[in-house]
Image (tube, rainbow, N blue to C red; front, top):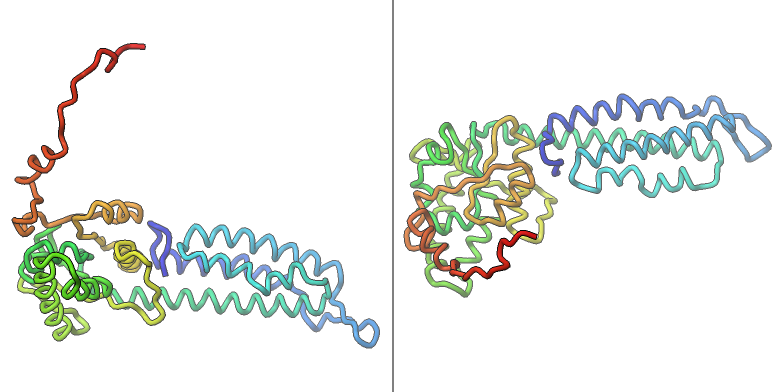
Length: 314
């Protein structure tokens, strides 16, 4: 579950706790109890008439305010819209029968408590899943694996900063490498993809709870999709989203997206994630890097003669 950029799992857990202990409990305490029921006639039961109108107004105001606050914490729109679901419509817009309305309100408040508790437990499990990740977490894309030298030979503990590192390969990257290993296109890329896929196979075979250690001590982890996880349609979006998912779980440790793709860099910045690229280990013939920069820029540079109106004062 994705949170808004800059929000951590710990902060979201605390926010939900305050939401339940504050406004939701206030709404629950304002609902008339069934011991207050007054039987009017053989079939009609009321719970103090006017008090239910006040309670409904309180509930509606709380739902509106809480939905806005949830939308500032959770990037998943399903979380705030849960407050305005089918039962909300029956409670607020249905016929005002005090007994029926009170019953629906009790059910809704209890279910919301359970819903928020499940969200909290889900985030606690996420934090625990990645507790063992190192000081620096590097999320790598398929482009980097294909255009840099073999990833198991790169000293990641010294690349993109210094210190113990965990190199994270999202599940979607593994599948993208697999696809490129047999797809039509450049024979060079297809051959590289097969080599990278072999290395990934070694990682998966040797993977333990503590990851797979490279020669410099860097831990390698394959970030597998959780059960029920729905991928984004675009692979770049999915990789950055997985990086953001990690950042909200491992903060204050820093997650960095390793990519040479400017589109992914811009997306990473949107989520507040820094990006980097080990240019030193780029395969030379790829035509990138500082020694190719001037030639690349020269290919898009033309001399345009100035005309008198260029730069003229108005």
